[in-house]
Length: 88
Image (cartoon, rainbow, N blue to C red; front, side):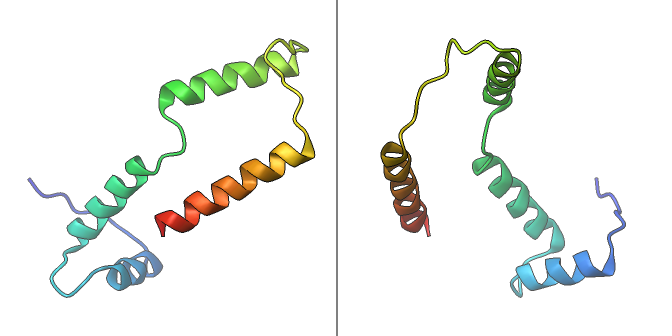
């Protein structure tokens, strides 16, 4: 079953640019949906956990808070940048 959707001209143009000659808009949209889920930052369960931890922190519960030094933060940033470069 096919459905008709309305999109702006700008989105139509963007989808056209993303599609190869043999791709339909459905192919492009399917790819974007799959890409989104594959690269989703957090699962729903993880998001719920982090939101609960943020709420605890905002309410003064520092039970799971750890001190972070500038040096260890720089190490983490360098590691993440390297991982990102390897993904590209």
